[in-house]
Length: 114
Image (cartoon, rainbow, N blue to C red; front, side, top):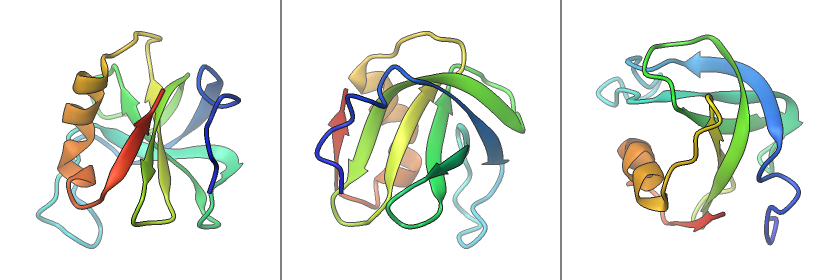
């Protein structure tokens, strides 16, 4: 697992949204995505899958994105880290980000990296 993300935070990334805002989790249909969720094309995470992202700053479902990585949520009890991407370049406070990703991250222990 990476110790920090100085080379990632601030980087512009592009990717695909496979779980758009308002969609249901494929394994847990009662969990609805309150923000767009997807992955960075061409970047692979520790779990061998494409790097997951939460996309902030847009309140409609989208299928693709380009945005700036503004934070990382490192799951302590899982192998997946989640990149927080700002669609419109806007910055968000730690509290704003944690509130928006809580719908899914409430089931994991993690640390927030800026």
